[in-house]
Length: 511
Image (cartoon, rainbow, N blue to C red):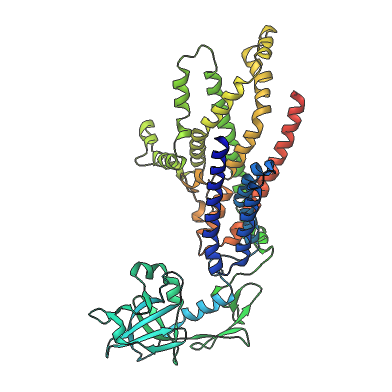
């Protein structure tokens, strides 16, 4: 019976794998993404090969974890590294052809005297997702119905159409007209589409269309764009991914290119970035170390109190102590932010203060450390409770017999033994708090900002500072953000590596 059940489970799981593979492969085929399709086929074949084989038992247990490791660890790391050496961001998202199309489409002006059309957008045939896009046009004056595709305009038979009172086409034989919701979902594709005409092209403007011509034209011969209104010529800078004039004026729209180590060099050479780095890094270290020390000290104190034999009602106390750990942290951070409000905050009302907690540097830093301690000490309480219960009682009893006081036993025996087992967890806590984005962004949001600077806050960590530089400026800069993320990772990795090396030495001493 057990064998039959196992076979049924295997069949069910492999069926799900096959269904997911087909679901993933379909859009890859339509997009002609052959590398992605090859990966899907290879992974699916590997899964079937291993789980249909009567042997290879270790591989059956290792494969799921390995695939998840690759999908959620290695691939994101690879994407981050590859992004860090590009100029990927606003204005540099697509390739050069996309940039040229966007520049020309953004400079389109309506042809004087040309008619306005009532527009309906449709897919050719019955494909309602990714078929050939066409415009169904109505010229209101004489009710002419026209089909606009990538080849130009052609007349439509009125008998094959269903129109409303204004003449707008609602249905057409051989075409699937998009609803308003579908129109909005494909707005980018519709906006970039143009029906070629002698004067220029017919383009959409909402649910109407007009005949327009671009004032900026790309010339492949000179690899440049000429503005017919101003006479300016923008030449392609293929190394940096944008079009620029001889005097240095460049178009906002560019394309994605490899910039090598420029993003990393910018972190050290740009004075706006390099200037506040030391102060932010110093506070970042203080915040991470302080968070670990305060949460560990409070968690250990609570664990030792609950570990005492004379304490009654331990279960109730332990439940109350872990409540902050059970609450959603983002919600609790927002609650704490309101508690620090200078006008109606609970802390000022209870203490009779009129303190602007996030208006001064050290009160703001004390506030975020207090909040992070409250959120983090239950975790330390739990791990310290388990470690205390695992300590050898005969060693502690021997210390008492030798005349050691409680504090001496704690300092010489209990704490060193605890650190042997807990140091790796303390290091991981440090790494987490070094990049604790939510603790800062949802409470102080980096405040206060000295000298009116909108970029550098006194409670900013490197991660929140990077976020503000990369995403809260004039545009999104994913390449630079990825480079700084790698820099932060290097800092944490070095500190963690040194700490783990010292931990191994400590283990040798107390072994």
